[in-house]
Amino acid sequence: MRISTTIFLTDETITPVRLARELEARGFAGLYLPEHTHIPVSRETEHPVGGEAAREYGRTLDPYVALAQAAAVTERLALGTGISLLAQHDPIALAKQIATLDHLSGGRFTLGLGYGWNREEAADHNVVWRTRRDLVHDRLALMRALWAPEPTAYEGAHGHSVRASEAWPKPAGGAPRVLLGGAAGPKLFAAVAAHADGWMPIGGRGLTKDLPLLRRAWEDAGRDPKTLQVVPYAVLPTPGKLAHYADLGCEETVLQLPPAPEPEVLRVLDGYAAYAE
Image (cartoon, rainbow, N blue to C red; front, side, top):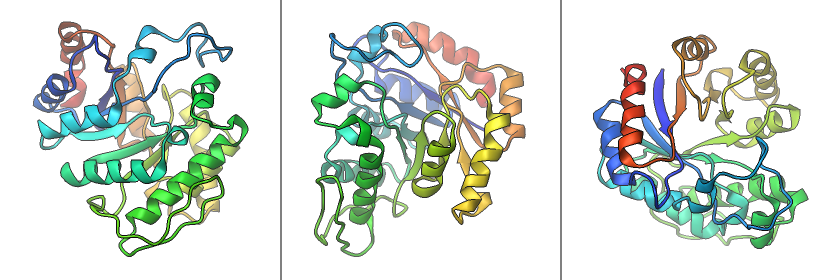
């Protein structure tokens, strides 16, 4: 099983360059970065795990810029978002960013997507909360039209459309792998089967119960059972937990690193290194 990592990189933590070099030197498979443009200080939205959003949420580096730095100083390290808030992006501009990053990194990029939890952050991007899921699916379809090998038009239902266009570079493999995050349930699993290459469950809890439901939704959508990818995300590892994921067929797990300065992050990496061997 491939062992990757995630971290809230901020202006107060280890830098993307230093982290990427250390991850590749220690044999880790990949680096995934979260995204928040800003965290409004006056808000009614509760954090998904309760309480106030931690300091790092309002200080996150832009994941695409940080991953570009990581790509430039590594050769094998996989790169991804975990997760990117597509509803808050112009999809034409983001399609170009992603295609450029994937092209320049030699096809190492994974697009981890989510619907978001912070209503006030989304509202500042003019996102209508009740339609955000459909908006994400719509914008992903538009980006895939721009990544298509031939000029392809797309008529969006939520304010973004694109004419058949020359749009280069293309992602190295035609389109990056897409993993969808979110809480387990029929609605989420139907979306994974319809729009993504797999699921990115935060923490990895409940997979024994949830995976049969996801696999059923996947097959009901006519997808090949062998192609479903499940990547437990932001995991605090134990040998037993990782063995359990492997037994369930997970080929990659993403371990959580602390949003800390370099010495602390490297100490944790040293502790995780045995899992990456």
